Amino acid sequence: MLSSRQRSKLAGLAQDLEPQIHLGRGGASEGIEAQLDKLLTDHELVKLRFVDFKESRHELASQLAERTGADLVRVIGNVAVLWRRSHSPEKRRIDLED
Image 1 (cartoon, rainbow, N blue to C red):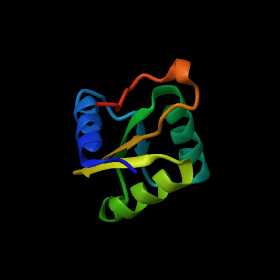
Image 2: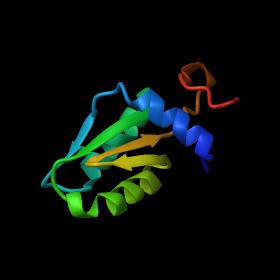
Image 3: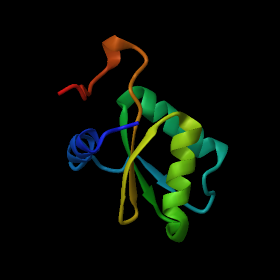
Image 4: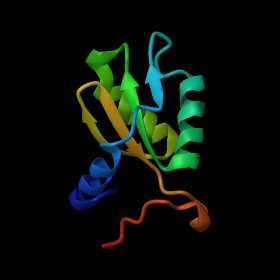
């Protein structure tokens, strides 16, 4: 569980990122889930843009975060920010320790 301070730091880091994954007509399919899982493994912090399903973006973002073991940092507009700490200490790019 992220603290508000950690969420704020992650949201600030995500500000300069482009969305790396787009959720369209296919919805939150297994393919999107697998792609998101790989992106989280590679980058830790991922932006997801909702092209479709905009009315249910909060629920879908929460479900994807839960299914990938990530934390939902924030949903702003049609973009969700997710974060998952790398299991490998050598691959960790983001330090949330204050």
